[in-house]
Structures are given as structure tokens and as C-alpha cells.
Length: 266
Image (cartoon, rainbow, N blue to C red):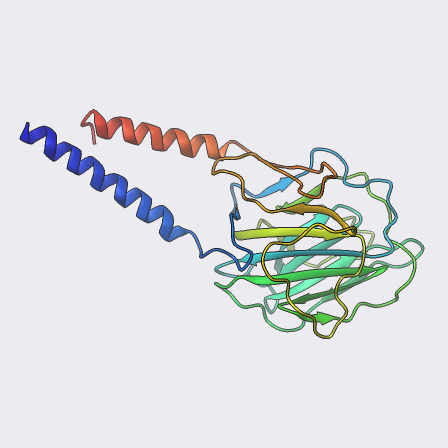
């Protein structure tokens, strides 16, 4: 009887340690609250399964998100936060740890904006990409500086990606350096068909992003742990899907560990 009791105490202690280690690995909730999307070298991106608004010619576009990362990309590299091949991209550049935005307009050279203030690490920050045929960016309510207003972004028949690597046509304007996979967390991604923020300063959104007449995609990432699908709350049906089977593998490992503990193997 005493042996059984000791084993139960040991199992409970091990489970407590596992839970504590998992909790320690997560950052605090973002200012928007709710869940978050974890990204790293293995679980590197989520994407739509089909082309994202392939026939739209946007005269204005705003892509925004809450992000958290513990260390920047090394110099000479960059991370893609949000992007669609051939149309636009929002990145963090390792040269100075700054934000960059790229967009390609019809009958115009691609607009490339990079540099500015250094992004804070180990903090939730609100990042924004702004497109008005040209491109601009900002974080925590400061930025703008887009150029060449007028016209519209080109069409693209590619999926939308959050995280990961978005291929760029090297014949067009692109970021210099190796494109690496994001290591960090992303929450509350919203894309709108207007320029929502006019620099040099604006009010940072409070709470969860809301759907309005200009919202064309919105992801809260409040799904249960292990989810592979993330719903588009805008109603336009552009759900995101996670690559790989990391969640299944993690769940299997935890189940195996629990089974071994109960059988007294560990």
C-alpha cells in the first residue's frame, strides 16, 4: 500500500514538473489576450490552402499582428512575419533588428522599406505593414513613411503565409540576405483592405482585433493546443493550416511518458 502511495506521489510530482516546464516556456499572454501561435525552425509557418484573394487589386492594404520573440535574426538574415509571394511581405531584418515591408504595385517598381528603430525583444509588440501602392511599416503606434500613393498592388495566385519562408522573385525588389524561419510567437493577425494607420503616430489597438467592413482576414489563434487548423474570423473562409505533425508527435510523447510513469518504467 505504501509503495503504491509513493508511486502515485512520484507520478504527480513528475506531471507537475512537466506542466511547470511547459508553462515556463510560454511568454505571458499578449495585450489582446487569448491564445497564441508558436513558430520555430520545425513548426515554421501556417498558410491558407488556396490562393489568398487572387483576383483583388488592392488600392490599400494593412497587415498587423502582435508578435513576441526572444532573439533577433542574425545579421545578413531576416524573418518573414506575414507574406504572400509576389504581392507583399512584412519582415524583421537581422541588420539592426528592424522592421521591413515590401509591396509590388502595378506599373511601378517594387517599394521596399527597411530600417528605423530597433525592435524590443522579449516583449509583445504590435507590428504593422501599410500598403498604398507603396509600402510602409510601424510598431507600437509609430511609423508610416510609405511612398508613392496611388495605383494598386498586383494580383497573386499564391497562398498567404504567417511565418516561414515566402519566396521572392529576384527580378523584383526584395530583401537582401537569407530568409529564415521565425522563432517566436504571433497573436491576433488582421489584414484589412484599407490603410488603417496614418503616421507618424497612431493609437495601438486594445484587446482583440475586431471585424469591420474593411476586415478581409482575421485570426485569433485561440484554438486548443494541438490544433492544425486556425479559423478566419472575418467570414471570408481563409482558414490557416499548420505544417507538419508536431502536435500529434508532442501529444504522443506525453501519452507515452504518462503510460511509462504509471507502469513504473520511469
